Image (cartoon, rainbow, N blue to C red; front, side, top):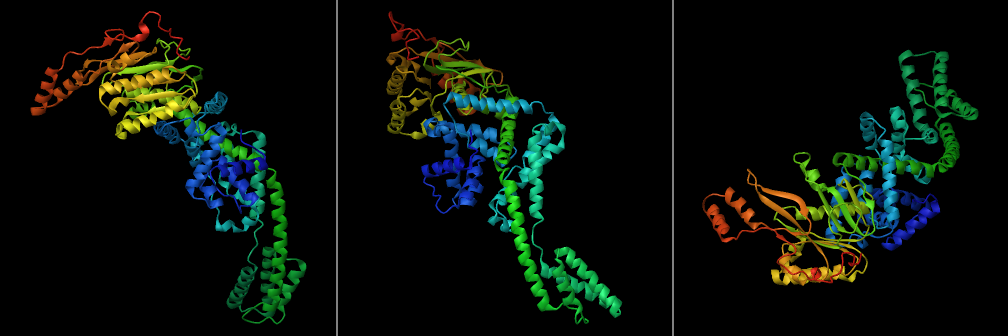
Length: 613
């Protein structure tokens, strides 16, 4: 939870700053407290303005702060660059639905956690806010979104320069827009007013009135007001050419206006009358020496009065500061939760239950496909699991799973879906599945497009040291890692990875076309699943059942791919593809048990439970 004590906030800021080498030297304690409050609101621009740091350094300190709250750094949980890229892509999907910059930042700086207590707390908090939002009508939600868009903290303004000597007042002035937003929400509809308690309403009303008191304490320009009086008197003299009695009456009238405008004391008013009436002539002019003395005395008195008012205003506002920050954080979190609710409703996202020995989901869908297709085409749901869970997926519980099958059949999509469901759970966010169970653990993700870019077997194998050197339980997701070398060697390398991981409690999903080259070298029980293509439809597209068949080697079906190309190509291109077709033998899918002799199927092989579960 966020600290409410100012001292605790500043101590935490100092701790965070020291970890990234940011200097707080020379920054006053009031400013440090303001920075710590901006930190909790992900206000990078405000932090940069207050400290003089660049925006990148400000973003680093915000990121580290949220990692501290999550109990671990992002790099200790999202262990590979691909895992971190995928997490960023996921959070950006949610952030685009937030109404305010602060709400969007809250997504972008959200840190993953493998602490089940923290994940559960996040889920419960979002659920609680969403429950309140669920009571609102569609019209109220639209109004709420419009109001939330104005949630921002203003930068320092030259117009408020005088408040810099009054840091408490400055703190409230830069938040005036948020305060007004909250008050407007309370007044807009009875539905939205229920988002706030009576005590919060009273608090915000009192803050607003106190700020009005401050606004009324500005010092008028006495010289300008007296000069305006002189101009008005001379204009009246020019128009009326008054007799002496009438002239005195005109002057007296303007003196009354000046007295009321400047709130002059009786002594100051008497002095101003003498400066006007003694030696009065046309054109009219106040005695300048007397006026200067009056103005000097008046300004000194106003400065003392203003200091007294500011002191009273600061005393009032000081006691509201913690409560106001809580209201602001809650408003930002309402924006955050509303974005989660919108995406959840659109794609029927559900919260995963936390498990202990695996990851599984029922009717899981790829979040990026759901966003891309936007209802244009149905995304086929898939049931899948790695490890041992309580969901009735129908697959043998194995820590290591090899996914094989058709080209363009959805293997990479399923791997990305698995990674997304796992990562979303670590953020405490809902997942694209009807039901899911996830064991919080660090994740290594290697996507195909990246492994191909590596271009060097040496570099690729070097990246595996990260996996083998980390003894903690982890989830490893690898997509066609074999593309880096010839099939025979690749099969043995993949088998080495499998054997290493299968001897631990870690989980591995390996997408590959080299099942037959790999399986003879595998020494421990694993599961092999296959995605099958059944042919081409009338449009020449692959007919694929995206749900993998468990314990089944899927055919890569190059024949169907070439057939598709042959049907869509003319001339020499079509002839080439047809010649390639004739050179291919018929391919089908082969049950995993034959003809390959699998070592764990021999008599006395370990049971499914003897896999580090």
